[in-house]
Length: 98
Image 1 (cartoon, rainbow, N blue to C red):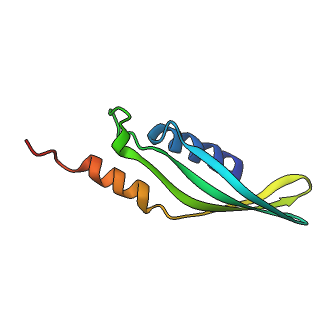
Image 2 (image 1 turned 90 degrees about the vertical axis):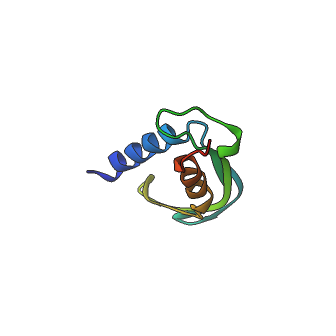
């Protein structure tokens, strides 16, 4: 699978479980062929067959490093703590007490 196809597949997969996924860039640094972005990302986790609910909202600081070659993205790296969404996923999967 090509890198572009993996990126599209990953994006679709993310939007299936976090339909309101967002990225907020607060700072950008350009250094020749590399752009570094710093900000926050988040959204609302929706379990399979479930509905969005406020208690499943999450956000976390994040950074992105983008390397450009010949005017195209050659490398895209994301640095973020996935624990906030993991906690929402775990809580949604836990059996509900009656």
